Every structure is written in C-alpha cells, then in structure tokens.
Image (cartoon, rainbow, N blue to C red; front, side, top):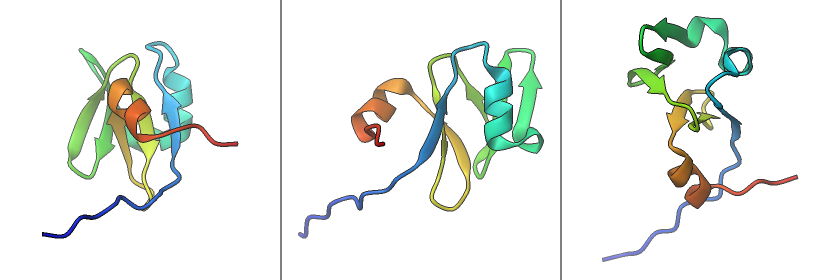
Amino acid sequence: MKKFRKKPVVVEAVKFGGTNFKDIQDFVGSERIVYGSDGLYIRTLEGDMLVSAGDYVIKGVRGEFYPCKPDIFEETYEEID
C-alpha cells in the first residue's frame, strides 16, 4: 500500500451568513443561483445543493462552485494573504 498527500490548492470562497445573498450571487453568478422555498441553492456539477447559513461557497480549481460545511472548511483550508 502507498500513502498519498493532498496537493496544496488555493481556492476562493465566500461565507454565507444567512443574509448575504447578493455576495453569493455576485461570487457564483446569477445563473447558478436557485431560490427555493427552503433557502438558497447553488447549481453544482452534482445538481442543485442547498447552502445553509454558516456554509462556505467554494470556487474549485476548475471554476466549479459548491457549498462546504464550516467545520470541514476550517479543517481543510487556512486563510492566506
């Protein structure tokens, strides 16, 4: 068995505070936003995904967008200058 390390990747992200809908829309583009009766959704490669308050919306290395729970985000990423 071999061991592998995840390559360092720099991503852009915006934290959804529950009210900053415009920030999320500006970040991902209005064509990727869906407002449902139960909240804000982002169109991702895997389908529409609900973004909950506290989630981070990440722009991936290939320009894709997806939500990420805050605990996982904070374990995986650190802020850079």
